[in-house]
Image (cartoon, rainbow, N blue to C red):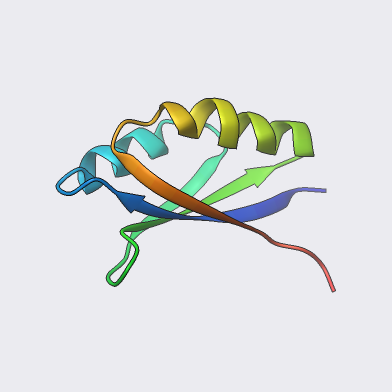
Length: 78
């Protein structure tokens, strides 16, 4: 079963487009949207396992230049 998480992202000023394009290169990132307000971007990741999710968050996204802060919201079934 595929799971998903939403990543709320604050970027360094002026780096929104760079971050947006870098995120789209990550295989498990299925969607990225520019938003207005306190945040700059929202990304959706789809993953098959917690290990895959951890790899995306810890290895892939931490290497994206221009990200200042993230918050991860993991979707669950109720």
